[in-house]
Structures are given as C-alpha cells and as structure tokens.
Length: 417
Ligand code: AMP
Ligand code: GLY
Image (cartoon, rainbow, N blue to C red; front, side, top):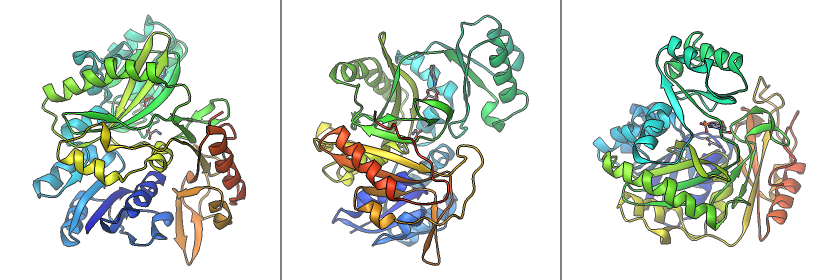
C-alpha cells in the first residue's frame, strides 16, 4: 500500500484526496494542512505542517511513498529538490522548472527563445525604463509583476496614466513586495481563455481535458479577478482545430525548450491560453494543477490518477495514461460575501448533506469546529455536477449549491453559459 502526502489546503487538494482515495493501491493519505473536507474523509488525515523541513521529516517518519504538491509557493522554494535529495518520490517541478511559473520574465524569455506563441513583451528591472516604455506603447497594455503575487499581479491598462500607476505600484510602492522587483509589460490579446492542464515527464507532455475557468467575481465577466469562480469542462469552444494549433505552436516548442534546458522533472504544466482569430496564444505557465479546474477535471477521469503519476515519474508518459468519461463537468464556487476583498469568517455552513444529493461537494475555505463546519476563507466550497451534457451538469451543480447555506453565500449564476 502506498501512503500519499498531498500538500495544500484548497478545493483542489480535497479533489486530489478524493481521487486518490478511490484507488485500492493507496493506503493512508495525509493532507498538509488540508481543510474540513479532507478532515472528514476515511483514510485521510490532516497534518498541520507547512514548512519544507517539517514535511520532509514527516514523510520519512510515516513512510510516504508519493508526495503531490498542490500550490506553487513551495515548488518555487524548491521542495521537489529537497525531497529528491532525500530519495523520496515527489511529483512536481524542481526549482529550475518552477521558475516557469515563479518568474514571468523567465517564462516569457523561455517562450521567446523556443518560439512558443505568446504576446509580444518587454521586461524591466528599473522603474525609469518601465515608465519610459509606457509613454508610447500601444493600448490597452498589460502590466505584470514578474514574481508570485497570488494571481493579483496583473493589471490591464487602458491608457498611459493607468500603466504608469500600475508600474509605480509594483516597482515604487512595492505593493507585491519582491514580486514587483521586475515587471513584464505585454501586448493585450483579445479572445477567450482556456485552461489546459497537462502532465509532463520532460520527454512527453500529455494534456488533460480542457477547461474554462471564470475568473471574475461578477456575472458576464465583470468585476474584480478572483482565484476562479467556476469551471466548465471540457471547454465548450476549444475543439480539435484549437487543440491541433495548441500542440503545434505551444506544446511542441515548450517540450523542445524543456529538453534543451535540461529541466528534468515529472509534474504538471498548466497552460493558460488565449484563443482568437490569429491562433492559440500562451498567456502563462503554471507548474501545478489549477483551482478550481482540478475540481471539474478529476471527476471526468475514468482511470486512476496514480497510473499517470507513476508513468510520469518513470518517464513513460503517453496518451493512454488518461481515459476520459464521455461527459461534462460544471463546478460552481460558493464564496464569502465581500470576496475577493474583505470578508468575514467563522460562519456556520448548513445543508451540505442535502447538497450532496445533487452533486459532488469539494470543500475549500472551511474548517471543522466541535463537529460544526465553519467558513474560513474567501472561496468556501465547490459544487461539481457531472452529466452527459453540459446543461445537465450545470443543473446538478446549481441544484446542489441552492441547498447550501451560510451567511452571505455568493456565487455566479452564469458558470458554463
Ligand atoms: P496571468 O496570471 O498572466 O494568466 O494573467 C491573469 C489574467 O490576466 C489572465 O487570465 C487574463 O485574463 C489576463 N491577461 C494576462 N495577460 C493578458 C494579455 N496579454 N492579454 C489579455 N489578457 C491578459
Ligand atoms: N484557476 C486558475 C489558477 O489556478 O491559477
């Protein structure tokens, strides 16, 4: 029996634990730190550890045979290198490959070097040079903090004044700390977005089913950006022609670059795509599963995730490692009132049992307190409907979320429309 350690605390990690728990080869599952959803599962134990050294000591003591890292921060810190040096199996990019997410400047230079189709860009370490550049670039333009900024370091600027303000907030006022030491300023691309998760073993890249995230808090893609308010999978507009363009213009050159740079790792590459009449463009690499994309994609996977992880670790990935249900998934996120701004926590959550009658529920920002489940984050839980049609999957997810109660529950009604 294989003991598995999953690192993270969101709905993504609950979905990963749920998937691994169905595998007869898996023994104990530990989630660090986990949430109320993973706490309630059979064979799953939450452990209150977040530092690399503590996680390593724990994995050694508890005979963990596989570690799966959910979120980006520890990957960029180099958790994969540390575990590998200790002889432990871990799925994720090493420190070098994690730079493809950890530094947008590094990622854009990589894309340019290997001919990956992406928006034109310039990068700056000096405030004055960045300010000079925005005086006569084309608008709208996109200003990005190069480092990790929890998805908040991207500003779409309509004119020079907005771009100047964005550059100053990052480089002068240091709104995102060291993440804004360097900025990338790039061409604004029209189109629709698509999330394409994949497994990579440095010799092959195998895509999972495509997904459409809904990033803004407001319906009709209005309002502030969030971590993601819902997903429909497969993506309703990303068809065979787009997939072929993606393989030719993005996947193949990325793989060539990974091989040429000697980035030897087994882990996830999540391609954030923009699709328009000129083709399929890469906005960014993430080197981990998406949240909430994972919650919609994993329920569509027919075989065990462990098959694909082991194939990747043994560098023998191929298209047969994923078998997909001929079905659609819709994930709707229930958030706290006020998110992505200020919100209250500690509010009791009711009627989850009734909601489970309609759809799969993955818990995100909630904790267990004396047998009661209380909100503890901005995105509280996910309702995931799976059905033969996208419309039926939506119906299940919305029937489920209509049951859930907590004070101020907020969700978009237009996921997958
Ligand atoms: P990123 O973290 O780089 O994916 O950016 C976050 C979001 O900003 C993306 O999901 C897009 O909605 C938007 N975005 C980023 N870059 C561009 C671009 N070049 N053109 C248009 N929108 C963009
Ligand atoms: N849902 C987008 C992300 O995980 O970055």
